[in-house]
Image 1 (cartoon, rainbow, N blue to C red):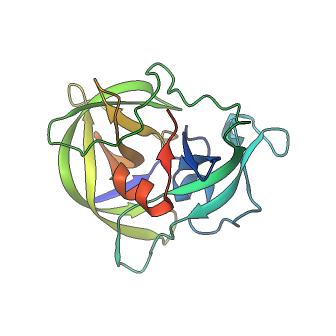
Image 2: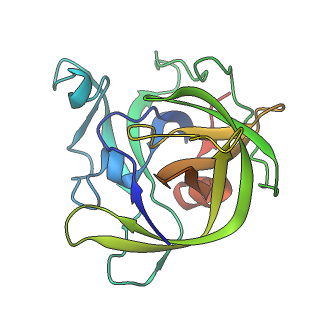
Length: 211
């Protein structure tokens, strides 16, 4: 199956914490320019450039770390990156998800037909259903760049509608009732949205969700 990453400029990101510092959690392709970002140098801005944002006026964080996306055809498991905001005691970014509320700190393992929700920059608040726990997909990252992802979570909007659209990458997907984190949205095609299992993302960076 072939799909594409969501538009990279303006994804809504989640706040996470490590060693007393707050970080923005998003996709590699959103805040690290698909492996081309410079750690501890590149600024993350909000709103994004496509929404009129500019640096340094709209800087909110500095790229800290990302997992490289492998474009050789080898398997990938996450498209993720974090950007440092600053000391947890000084962070002014609201960890609540718009129209949803504060996510729980403990992740929940995704289940087939589980009801989930997210708030994205483009489509806003959407409710959907997990329809696949082991999706294997090719994802396009621009001319001549594709990456193979395995064991991804697939979500369909209620009534087989779109759960996301371009610009929604980086959105945290949570259980529709408990608000426990389930996945990190990164790609989509037709009516399907694809997301990385959130436990893999949090574990890779050694971070926890900010309550």
